[in-house]
Image 1 (tube, rainbow, N blue to C red):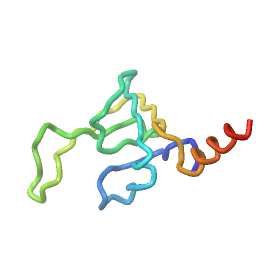
Image 2 (cartoon, rainbow, N blue to C red):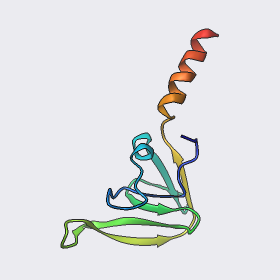
Image 3 (tube, rainbow, N blue to C red):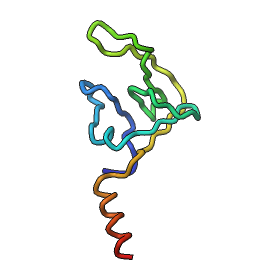
Length: 94
């Protein structure tokens, strides 16, 4: 896996943009210069995020979301599992 998160990612397992491996590493999102922890889905090239609208849900039990437009930055919060193991091995050899 690369050090760049996907351009579009969703936390909804039924979405075609769902990626369990990327979500396990943790994704940090900065929207309009403010770090957000409540993002349900984002699209960096298009410049939007979806956030839950309080505790409201639709008739299927999924959260209602609000689409916000603006500058989106994304990053991984933890290194990939293989990269972490390689980095630790290199530190011991030095």
